[in-house]
Image (cartoon, rainbow, N blue to C red; front, side, top):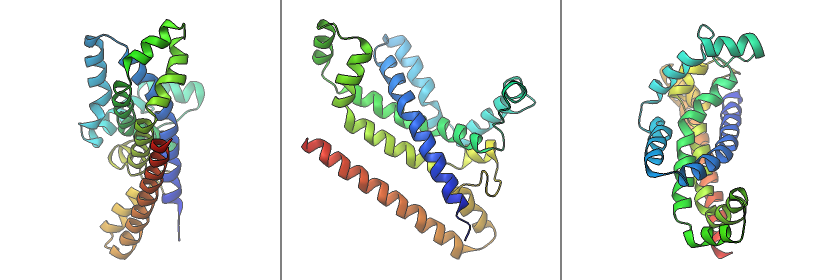
Length: 220
């Protein structure tokens, strides 16, 4: 049994969740404190990948990171970084698609924090970074946990953009979602069913862990 699709999917989900957690919190905090015009524009831009087809996002990423294009060629020639048809491409594509989930959950969680607490912290002379770390994040931990879980699940199951940018190279970029699609095309429904059960089992475990963590957080 070749478990590489599952390993690649898990690695991609973990990497995307790690990046999205920190970048999403920082971005949400910056947008949270911006004026309404900037907030509306930035919010629309950052959540755009949630509403466009993943294949459209993958096509845009392919144009950007193709080695025949300026950005892709620059990365390859100067740093030896190849995004197209590589595991890095899996991470980039999944990040673009899954990041809005972390950002939106963080934004929503920050909006629920009592603004008087933030004003009081500023009055006491705390820096914005300290307020974020010591006041806002602890008060909105439930939303951040939910966002992280959703981000992981979305990144692990990403198919459209990943196929466009990273391709379907066995043992390198072929994820579990691509594996299911390929075996269905081959008519091997038994193998497809096996991988579906694996995905459902992982999703169930992740959701259960999230519920346990949230329950402990609420009790505390």
